[in-house]
Image 1 (spheres, rainbow, N blue to C red):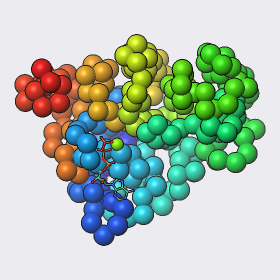
Image 2 (image 1 turned 60 degrees about the horizontal axis):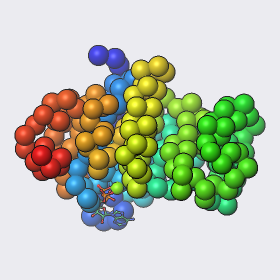
Image 3 (image 1 turned 120 degrees about the vertical axis):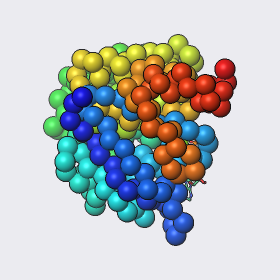
Image 4 (image 1 turned 90 degrees about the vertical axis):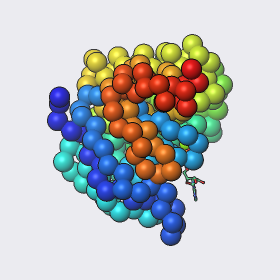
Length: 238
Ligand SMILES: Nc1ncnc2c1ncn2[C@@H]1O[C@H](COP(=O)(O)OP(=O)(O)OP(=O)(O)O)[C@@H](O)[C@H]1O
Ligand SMILES: [Mg+2]
């Protein structure tokens, strides 16, 4: 097993006085995919927000490659190799596809960064029907998975993805999952994959973390969870 890339210990976090996440702990080894699944309101999105430094109230330890992320603002995460693709909102509609891709590389919402080579952006946007000069809003229709690419331009070591399958056709969901698996296998990318769609996420994941009421209810291998009869009936429906 490779060394831990992400380590979360005693994480308690939320939006105000009452914490949503309580005493959450897990480790994600480098070059693996951890699926985070669980029912609506379990705290999956809150967990990603805590990891990406966008929650007001947080206790515990979050470290990437041994470096603490406590106090690191969201816009500086990219310098620690972390990219966060929030649920459904990774694209700025007023900007062009090309501009969105550049922003994905710099972690700033204002000026495109000169440090992201434009050929990388061109390579990404050329794969998107609609091309570089289309408005970002167009990505929400035919090519929603391009929002994930906007973060991949930064060449992260850790990708935090919130429900990438949401609202997409099964064919596109399959494409996203196989792309994540290939990125892990080819580049050693480490992924925390939040998904309601456990059916699609578990086959490409190494480990699975089930959140329930803000706590880790089950932490096991993805293959084991997929074959857990209780989990299958509760979450997969068969
Ligand atoms: N901005 C917010 N302010 C206050 N409470 C919030 C906020 N966002 C979420 N919550 C609460 O935090 C809890 C966990 O919500 P969260 O969105 O993390 O769940 P989730 O597992 O991502 O659910 P879903 O599967 O619906 O996306 C819920 O009780 C929710 O009402
Ligand atoms: Mg959510």
